[in-house]
Length: 305
Image (cartoon, rainbow, N blue to C red; front, side, top):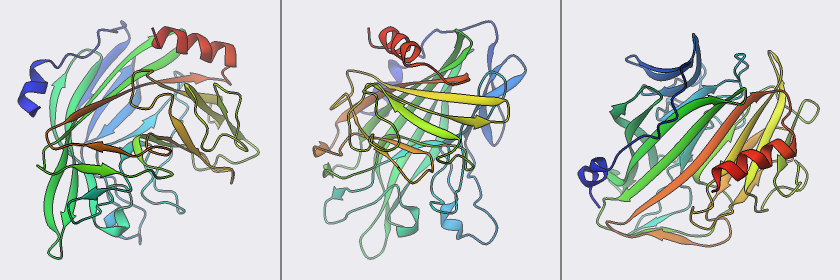
């Protein structure tokens, strides 16, 4: 399916609240709740810290995501993984013809994800075109493997900033992209505030798993919560039940730092054939305080209908 065909059906969900608006600058697409920006998509690459290899410059990421009271729930360029930037996505272990591009680990210089152009803006969201780009062969020939449409829309409900994240990936390379089973990578990743640790933050999944036992388990949802500027805050991530291999297995860490990956090929290999399209849907809920499991299940029930 080509991009023009996809664009004919492009329509962002109509979740408009009176408080929600969208703005655009040369650098960003931002979504506001009233006067407060609570989501920022980067069209221009975020620069890594001074002295760090510029290969870690990256656009096509979301940072920050904030609670309604402006508490920041995302982190960027941690010194343990400079390629972790807010909310992002990329495939890691792949086979594409004679090459094995890694679109996630930028230091390998075999692939990356990049912003291409804005496709649409509405009163409550936007759609952008992105690429997962490989550098193939000895000459590192730049090759677009996946053409992507990322649709982001927002609403304000039940005292929470609600974000719908819909990613459509089309293999435009003419060659099958194989995705062997691997422990991380895929359609959604999240890095929490860099000061979160074992003492001030935690995970909770729909299956009652936490930091110590959530890795490689399946869940309908996973929340990350911890101390923020405004007290405590929670980011709840819901995976749509019609996503490939849902409910997804998770990549989490037990070292105290907050990283979460919806690892859609952690257990089973997958492939996106030449010309094929796959769509991934998620909902992110940003709110004050520590969300209860009961409330998370209510959000899931509404999303999974």
